Amino acid sequence: MLIKEAQEKIDNWIKTYGVRYFNELTNMALLTEEVGELARVIARKYGEQSCKETDEHKNLEDEIADVLFVLICIANQTGIDLTKALQKNLDKKTKRDANRHHENIKLK
Image 1: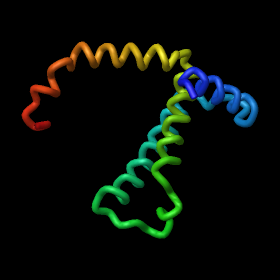
Image 2: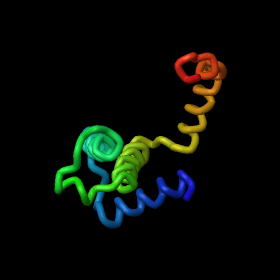
Image 3: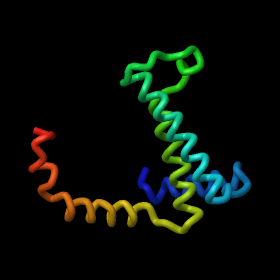
């Protein structure tokens, strides 16, 4: 699925099942919540924290998808074309970091 298609599918889903988008501030709070849930899974799977029984049904794939869903909602409701935004961001990073990481002795 292309990013543009994902934006369209989520827009259609919101209009069909969600009635309307939550406002931007609510979606920012939801994004924070979802990132926290993602962090919890990573901390337990890759970090030193042990799982609680309530964490056992959570999975990384689903939590990443939740974060992506809310990010796309925010992009849709604020008129951002994520394909263009991501390409512009990659161009910026490429120009800025062309040699930076290769010259970083910490990464060797």
